[in-house]
Length: 138
Image (cartoon, rainbow, N blue to C red; front, side, top):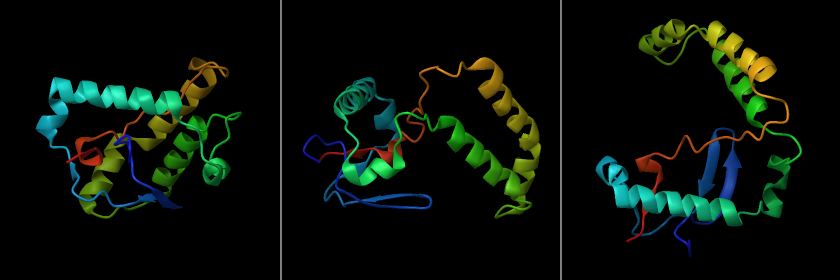
């Protein structure tokens, strides 16, 4: 929190993580997120985080620097999506069927085997870096 990056990490569960409460903080609005000085400041903070981040001992079991987790995670998500015959709502089920998940799986397999070299320096992006996930310092 000293750097306004995150509060204390409290734990991990199947679908995410739990962090401490940031009293007085609030999520950015979409308008603030689109503001050039704000998005520039976010980029600077992300660069600082990546330049100085060391995986804490208590998270080492989730991190193997010798084995990129990207393909494993993408395949796990794909298998999870393919395992559902029905989603929460009929509309969700219709959308999933229109996605043609089997074709997307074939494309994922093709990317891994034919397009991205095995020794490529690939990593997940912060695809969850959304305005609602960024807390503004008071």
